[in-house]
Image 1 (cartoon, rainbow, N blue to C red):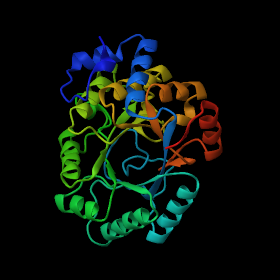
Image 2: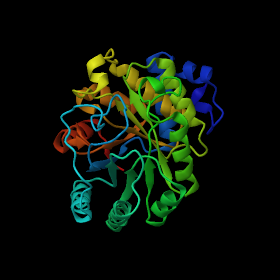
Image 3: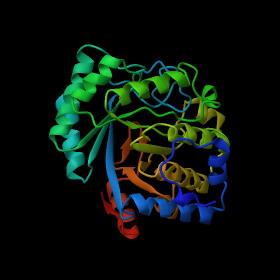
Length: 321
């Protein structure tokens, strides 16, 4: 099966994706690396920074999320940050080497009125800093998606999290269809899509493949595909349930399969990197990951500090995209 010879496709079948995922690992990484080198500079990694601009109090029941109002977690509620405070953080991120600044608000749906106007000011301010701007605000209306596009938003993050089949095991307060409709609104407004999922929530390998199949069916493919490893936070259902830990090589398989299915997308190695060895991260980069979140915090969960990442990237011979 000459996977690397395939052109950009949107018509993958689940059995094909599973066959890719289940290849002998070294063969899979080699083929993914071949695809990666065809479409990207393998020495370049984009550095992104992620800031929680409104923390906690979300009415959703996402089982992995410490920001849900339904769970008692170490995360405190904090109101929407002031525009200048956010832009000061963006300037610091830019000066540290980040080229994309991502802003997350713990809302079920983007809030209309003054809060949304403040977010639009943040987007404009980040773009004025010559950085890419990404937000994740929950579900959007058509009008909100268009307003974000007019403000210059580069990308909208709205993850699928897992397969449609496993989704209700993780979240019950919104549907898979809700997520897909938000992504369609974003795309229709002319904003790039940032969409991926989480590995390690108790899903099976077929669920990872099904999620990637859905993403690969988007036309065009998502501009960026975050691959997260579950970070267990006390107070969340997935911390209490303690699903079996996922072997790092399963994360490598997920990254490699994403690269083969979506050759032009940025595959972003996201949450959970703090629990990975340098060797595991190196395999992910070899398998096609070419973007990371830079900084010691991802919304409310820990991330390697900048110095550690500088050391890691330097040891691997990787530079900023």
